[in-house]
Length: 247
Length: 247
DNA sequence: CGAACTGTTCGGCTTCGGTGAACGATTTAT
DNA sequence: ATAAATCGTTCACCGAAGCCGAACAGTTCG
Image (cartoon, each protein chain N blue to C red):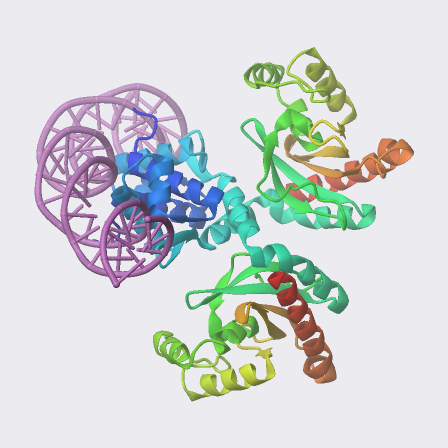
């Protein structure tokens, strides 16, 4: 009936969330931040501690590494990740650039695998989420959705159009059309002004289940390399990954 | 007072845990497994769904990638990881072997960073946990604890001594003594029969905060390489990481 | 030395989470 | 085709338990 049928678990989640932000916190501090009583926070912290999620040292609390374990376990369960990661490695080695594997969750692109090249990372890590239309792999998975879905996305996304960010208006639909035609999407600095990239869909059983991409700084991503060489590599690697996924 | 002051959150955690195991599940299935009513499971799943942790498609539920994000965020907050990861990379490249960064949490070694070499991974991933005494990096951090702590560990650990696993008896204390003397610990197949390895402590402000190690198959880890070359590399890299951590 | 913190504990009131049954909607079996 | 057996979802009820606020003990700061 209500938004959170189990309110207590919602509170616990808020405690965890707060601990992610502040890293190290005391009971009073958390109670003030979450606007609940000290005793309540204390109870949730104790519960989290017994669960192995939270660790305490003389009155201060912080998150332990248990969530890292479950998070990585979730990723390891993904069939797409299990079979595609070797292709991510291949692509990273042949291009020498940062390579990413992305899936869509709701209206967000989730980076499942990130291989950063030597001097170029862009603060993206596995688990990072960005709106679909702000990154090449996201545009790929978005482009292959139904027209109604795309319209709904354009409507739902409060795309605050900065200079380079594609907004939810006409231009997005146009670009997605060409993305679908070519089977390729490009980064042109929408998310990070210096970042360029190419991405292609990974298709299993005829449906797009994710996208593979490379990305890097403008200086190395231009001309024939950006327009022909990298697209060819990304496209063929993504196709191979899809075929491997079908088997 | 009780074990889990917030019982509802405990139940939610059990639901998550169950979903990690079975990957894809229905309400009835989970209710039977957790021995709670269907309605209860339903409520917890809805709550988790609103929290973005769980995703549902026509009656079946699975974990989304939100936990991957928070898990990786927790790791990124660790000062040890932030400064040591480049040394992990260095060590992986110079040795060409699987390289790991480990911290202790309670009586377990937690793998914070894992760089697997081409053909050798041993199913260890970031977040993996093993008893301290079963792996070289774990032995390192254990060896630098106080004598009382080591005794308590030997007592608490129900070390089921297989052929090669060090048990909690005399031999463990002996080995830990030499580990502390040399500043080095070795894997000799305790955890996985084929696996050999070397590990050294990372020291910050005079205390051991973690361990750096390399590991690989018996065939490549033997003789002078295992006894001299790799120990030298691991030792100096770990020392550098510690110095970088002090600054 | 006391004032202002801290984290922890403890009753008590009220909420709310859990149960078990009933609901449609699918699916399986006959 | 029809019925039996699931499924996920909803609902009202009630006892348990989560939340609060105050009091507690221990530290730190002034």
